[in-house]
Length: 193
Image (cartoon, rainbow, N blue to C red; front, top):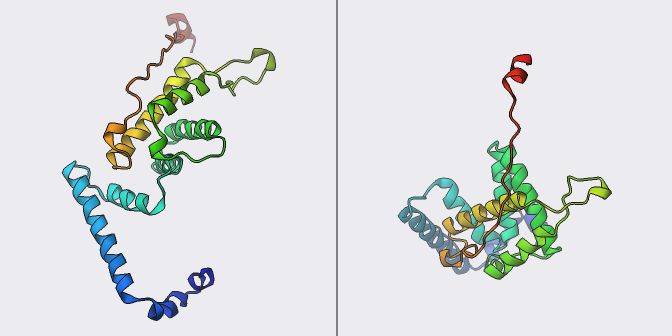
């Protein structure tokens, strides 16, 4: 079949041999599914072309959260959000490291999974510190940033009906952060500039 699809006329040669009833049924199911996606998004006030296309494509591709997260990360980059892209990309790298080569489906994102991922991040070495004598773990504030991204991805998936809203896994999660002090220039330092 691969050679048929690679040839520009291969599919046309194959069509007369396919049962037309099967083709019509498949098209009818696809159109009805697309209409259903549109109606759901319209009722929620979210029926944009992009959301409809995304809902249709998601059904065709996978139920993988990792695939969805990477696709969403690429969309952020394509929209010019380089700063946010770096954060989302870092989150995807950490999540893949936690999954150790396995896939993560939407159904697997439970409060227990969230708790395990949280403890993984708490014990993860900070890759920005290259001096072996100064080994440090991720700061609580960095972990909070990672979970804010995770929550945004899950909320977006719920909005697109990739996950049921009652499956929201972060209700019991509490992350303690550390207050940060931002260095401020004095008036003398500003004058010297």
